[in-house]
Image (tube, rainbow, N blue to C red; front, side):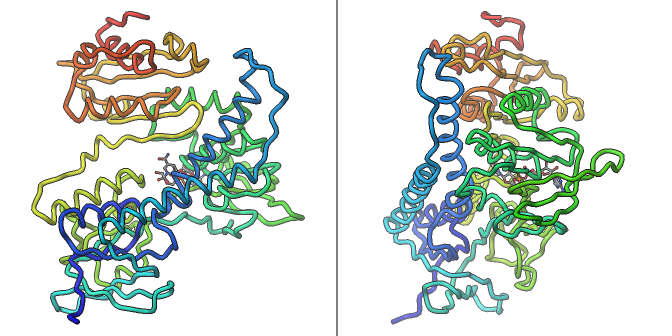
Length: 471
Ligand code: NAD
């Protein structure tokens, strides 16, 4: 039998890799995917986006029943938590979704090789070689005309507070605590810290967030962050801003953390568990040895076709520059494959939305006021509070607003920032309008169903021209 040479071998079965593999198979390529985990979906499905949203949804229901049902006239005995059942449901959601990708691979005849893939240095021949070891499959070498690297990222560890898998943990372990921690200290007030901090806060932990910067979420709209900070404070989350965690030590079943605040002021804080969420880094180990150029942050350098410095080797997702988001990786995976086939598909980087799944949620797309001012762009602001939305009133979810930033001349949308109920879903309309280079008049002339939260977007667009009806 002739030796199999794949058209494409993908290393990494996360959002960047699995989506690219499916698209490549759809376009007629023979595809192999090397994945170290026993399930597909990468961090996103196994220990990131999906399990965290499953826990956020369950914990939100619990907190609603405990804290808010009475306001709706529903009187119940205080709800009790079955944490094991809650975690089992989350695991079930993950299992169904990762299994779904495995079925899609079968449907598209994609060869899945379980094990750790390693790109061999290019040998001068036509094919690239990927060795696979450590998995269920025997050690083997795959030959491929092209290789796509989609190995994602890894959590950053604090040098003086290393992960121990039990008391000092990253997101993976914090998604599976088998007891509600008494005091959970979260290092880093970013995406992971605020989302997973919210989960355990709702389930009964005391949660303290330590953030090195003077404010949370520095890249988000500051007014939206203010609304969120106040709301989380009301829910009981405590913050130490402008404070760094410089180290810590295990002490009698607890961790004693060393904090350094403004003007070098130091203090100690005891925690039952510490979640370190201070960012992620690209998983690019071994790639320089394979001849790839990396930047000073260890990210793989690619051209506009996502091709690395080694011809025929491509990279997408958290390995390359840009926001470390699953949907960004998916877009890049598709664009990379379609460009291999000669299409001119491109990723609209300025229009990648960002969502923080707290309560209320923050979602945004495009530029912030700060970025527009810095660039000297003349803009108008249209803002509509959920307080004035009929649907938000019925839901009893009136915190927050929709803010539309539009060009002074012509009203083209430049940025949309939402803090409030279902902001994660509402942002899709803004993204679509911006992708079609729409302006405030396009939104104002579009009939929005009443009563819906989406009406707040229309009203904010009207407000940019001083024409909001309900304000
Ligand atoms: P992040 O970059 O969002 O936040 C890390 C925070 O830690 C920063 O605010 C930083 O100032 C702070 N920090 C750093 N060192 C510190 C120290 N010693 N003491 C105190 N604070 C310190 O990183 P993350 O929350 O770990 O998330 C990692 C990545 O995962 C992000 O890039 C994000 O894009 C992605 N993610 C996205 C979502 C989502 O889209 N909803 C959810 C989770 C994760």
